[in-house]
Image 1 (cartoon, rainbow, N blue to C red):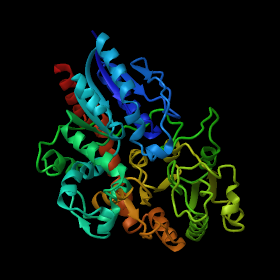
Image 2 (image 1 turned 135 degrees about the vertical axis):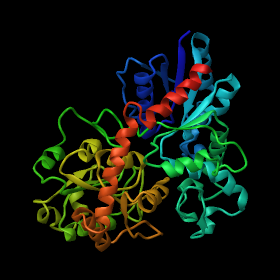
Image 3 (image 1 turned 30 degrees about the horizontal axis):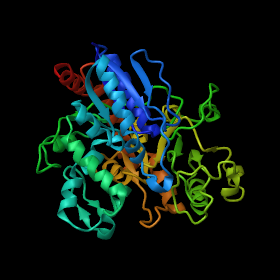
Image 4 (image 1 turned 30 degrees about the vertical axis):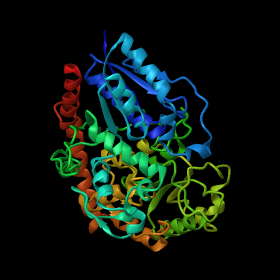
Length: 472
């Protein structure tokens, strides 16, 4: 029977894309394995693979519970699909030599299913080692206090391997221990610690100190830490999409043609992922900051939520048919048309970052965006919005010096026009801290390329985990 590895991502596009890249990597370097990726029937905007080494299976459709019953957490769809997953895994195991199941944090409900079938389970951590340190240390933090992180406010948390983190900067789903989301996250962290291993979308050179601290067991002081395999970074190989997804066409995006006409490394790119929405007031403030900076810019703008009181992010598509011009200061587009371009909702992020005209990136600190920027050698300005992005910002700014920070409101993550203009200008002029960041990013890019090359640390890590499956 063929040695088989099954991958089961949560039905979030970024997780599916990253897991698919892992499957492609395994198929390329370890073709002895048959790779099956199982997708939930709820998976939307799932990328299509034409890789002959990967088989895609879709779970049988099951009527989903009401949204109110689920509280709309990312964990619930996987929890709802456990019976279908059990049947699918049993069917695979009956005809193939099933060596391992690889899941991500949000598909954690698969862990007990695999355990009941006797299948070794590995977690694929789609973010970096900095965020992984937080997840592995959460059970320890949970046991050290009865308070929620939201009630600790600015109190400093000491997480091994990381700069001091304010309790309020912890990933959003961890803020209140009475939330269902918190319970799911805590269960996922405990299961991750009990798993056969953790595969991380990073490389040794990018996060060497944090990876070393994790491997030494400092994040999990009361139990053995599972084997850690840094096999990345895995950047989407089909470069027609960004982290947030979006409609794509065979036609070259107009923003790339515009970039062709700009001087080398002169354009700052602003893009904030699929959930990066700002209030109308914040959009005007950002426009004013870009205008004051005098810097060339390419800005991807999503219309704000229909609720004008919304402060920052929303996953809603409400307002997508609205003209962007109405949210800009009067005359802004005309006054900046010689040096700026505003794109509605989506741009091909990987292609943009790889363009020779792009010299800076204002980012929400999503991990996919970070590794895409470093892979392209583009320095960043960090504007975290949601999820684990404040943790990523701490790594980027304080640990790795790959980005400049923005002073922002703790309440609503808002940034003033003057602050945006100041940091964008410093980054693009390449003086002071901007020069340091630019040099550090170029060095990080070299380390990343080396890690991914033949004999590099990421390939060695991939071979190490594959060797465990061969012995299984």
